[in-house]
Length: 83
Image (cartoon, rainbow, N blue to C red; front, top):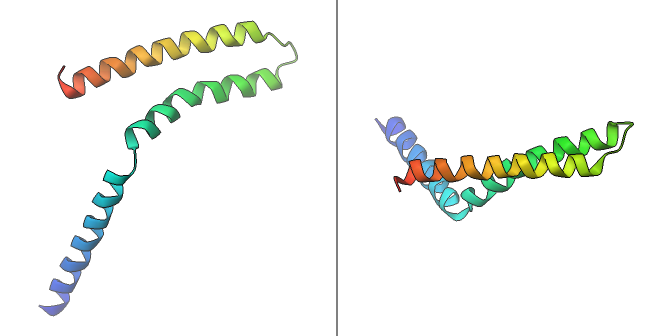
């Protein structure tokens, strides 16, 4: 029985530490920044690899993608928090 109690205590300690870290990190902001930066990274990569440079086209596409992402994020926020 001693080994089982030790394992349960160990699992509880790990779970407790995980919850402390989870509450300490600003996960909401991290997810939002990551969510918004992915299209910018792809468009920047495409812009540098493309032989034809059209920065206004890339900026326009990025703004449209960001607007759609913000609308989707807002809708998900409303559904999650039942607003």
